[in-house]
Structure formats: structure tokens, C-alpha cells
Length: 409
Image 1: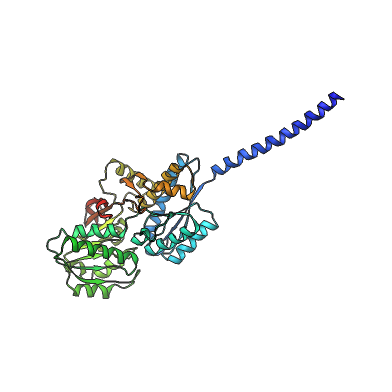
Image 2 (image 1 turned 90 degrees about the vertical axis):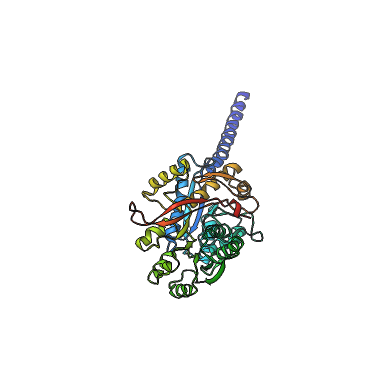
């Protein structure tokens, strides 16, 4: 009997051990399986219309970084998965697709938006949904203004203060310029950049007079009346903020009116007027002799790291003359990945804390997100458009990089 009972007890114990072992194995596998789930990044971005030439490039840069780091095993043992949606350059659509990606597709982070209006709208959604949002393009100061700042919004783009002041520094060095005009789309980015430029150039050159300011609507189809009115004001130079894929139309409409000739080509184009997309798209219609800015340029001599980046980008895109916009998606993802590593988590508040004061080695050198305003120290590439027989369209030459540290406060 004792032997029999021992047999029964042993069987029960074995059954219990088997159940416990199975439960333990299940509990052990669940976190491991969860750890292998991808880190989903939602990218609300303009992928149609005039600005798509830039938005698709930003998305490619986002995917490029994800592909590179995934090939190395990802972050915290998890790979990135990019989920993109077209905002159509509309704030309401940017909000709709962002909310859908967070709630339905359960993305962990948002990296995107294009216009300033989109950026501020999605910032509000990020705050409401408690999802971390990194803006690689929107430049309006309102995005990271003290009364608008919250733990879930960060920017790796330039802002309107730094962009406008950099343009003023450049134009202030033209001694022949006394009468200045501006033309900018009548929305947050255009208004803020023009205001920053005017305030700074008046400080640098009190002798300069602002003689005209034109405010076409965003995505204006016909600039003729604005161009004619500006010529009539007889400025010596113009600061333009025509952006978001609209510079092509503006330049083509200005050409038969001899607008740039009336200015002796003393024209500075913000809003990426110097981007390879605009140079390539306009070709012989591009107004050679004007100055423009861009996030990056294939012929920018930024040192070994930038040269290596350019070669990788060429290979990734399959283009010998690559866009300068992928770098924005790339560095946004670079900041996100480094912050996740630092936090040891994808918890949004922990990643937010990790981003504040974080410095990365970007393809253009060190870049930091300042803790006090959650704004990156994003410099700008500037250059003068010239004809070059080596290329079928104008290129920037000289090309220079402007450090914005002295413009940020």
C-alpha cells in the first residue's frame, strides 16, 4: 500500500510539476515574444501634390535609417517598422491619419508632418494621446513655443527664427541693398520666417527700409499679381518664403515678367528654394544667380562623415545626384533610436526624458536637442545657384553650412 501510495503521489507530483513547468515556460516565452515585436513608427507625411517631391524623400530617409539599424539587430532587440500615411498637406488629414495610426495600427511613435499647420495640429493629438512626436520638417516657432510645449513634442528641423535670421545675416552683407521686400505664403511658416528676417535685418542694418510685403495664400496657383506689385515697389532685394513645392510655379511665372532681372538676382529663397528637387525640376528655368537654402546638398564638403553619408544615400536611392531631404527623416529616426537606447524602454515619457539634451553624430556633425525648448540645433546649407556644364541643371556653388547656435535665443 505504501508503495502504491508513493506511486500515486509521485504521479500527482509529476503532473503538478508538468503544469507548473508549462506555465513557467508560457510566462517566459510571452515577454520574449513581446520583446521581438517591432517598434512601430507612424510617419504622417505629404505624399501627393506639390510637396510630395519633398515628403517622399523624408519618408525614404526614415526607412533608410530603419533598414540600416534593423540589419544590425534593431534597438533593444526589436526592429523598427515604418507605417506611412499621406497627409495631403492638410492639417485635418494629418490629424486623422495620425490618430488612426496610433489607435488602430498601434504605432508607438510619430515621426512626420510637413507644413507648420500640420505639425501644430499633430502636436495637439500627440499630447492628447500621450504618444511621442518628432517633427522633421515643420518650422514654425509656434510648435515649440513655451506656451505650446509639452513632453511629447520634439523638432529636428530648423525653425523660423533661425532661418529668417540666417537670411538676414546673408543679405546684410550686400552694401548696395537699401530697399528690401518680402514675399511669403500667408500661413504660420511664411508669417513667422518673414517676421524673423525683418526684425533681424533691421537690427543688423538700420539703414535698410522694408518697402513691400506680399502675402499669397499657401499653394497659390497664380503669383502674377503679387510679382507685378513687387516689381512696382522697386526693391533692391527680396526675401522669399515661397515653399512647400510652390517655388517651381513661382519661378516659372516670374521669368517672363523679368522679375529676377529687375532685382539683379539679389533674391534669397527660404523654404528649400535651393533644394535639388527645385533645381532639377526647373532646370533651365531656374533663376541662376539667386541664393537658396536646403537641408543638405550632394556637393557640400561636410567632411568624411558627410561624404560617406552621401555615398550610402546614393546607393540606397539608386541616384547619382540624391535629394537633400532624406537626411531629415534619417536624423529624426537617429534621435529616436538613441533615445530609446538611453531610456532602455519605449515608454513615451522615458524616451521624452532621454531626448532632452541628447546629442547625436548626424551625417553633418554633432546635433543636440535642447532640453529647454526641445528644439534641435539644426544648421542649414546655403548656396548660390550657378550653371555647371557637369550637370543638366543649376547647382549651388559656393555651398556653405550655417551654424545656428547664435541665432537660437
